[in-house]
Image 1: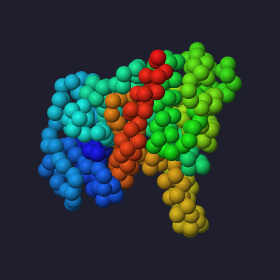
Image 2: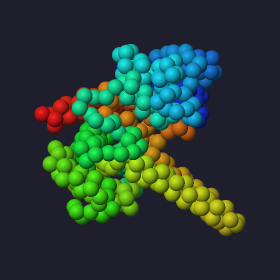
Image 3: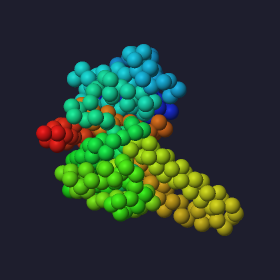
Image 4: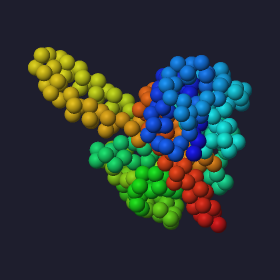
Length: 329
């Protein structure tokens, strides 16, 4: 299989993209990688070109660019060309750590939606205390949603959890302000009724405070709420670790304790790092499109490649298309 990577997207591009690609090639013998970007810059870090190709371009979509306009005007941007490789059948999937909105636009306008999918969903796998993690969607592909969209999110997330994460009969929860069936606004009430009838393992409502305890393997919500929750979790985790660091560096006694606890603290930090699970999948497109975190290092890029490989291997897109077709009959 071939995976196209936007080598110029992200805070640390192209170095971390190249290093992540080299590691993935060493780990997986069944993949080829196409790095799309400035060849001169890429070659500064490319120590092994085995099964790694370069598609040269000097055009880049910036984080400050207006997403849709940038995709339409910058036809030779590294992100757009990576998506075009997928659309032309020259690559099986693509990855970018660049402008999130532009990648979603590239996915929609270049790769295209699965027939029957009304709204694609952006979906990371978030960590839980027990280490299982959960698939969370939508986290910002669409600010607004209808109840029918949440059902499609649930189906797509359930397929991904089963095929890629290896969870048999994954539990699907609806994010809400209470666990009772009648709680919530009109969207969640309508979605609850539809999810009960869907061909998934729907377990009911889950509350935001429970998310990291792992009450469900898949949690669905509208993109506005999902993005707010995701950024709240990110911000809270960073703040807690910052306060902990300040406390542990406050005096000699606490510094000695920090030295002893350092391995355990690093383990906790890694456990709560969702980039360890890969990137956020843009579900509902005709091929896997993965959004890596903007600050991705080589390990995060490697994990995004591993995740993408598994999506292609398990033919997640075809499984989603088949179930959506059956549902619409």
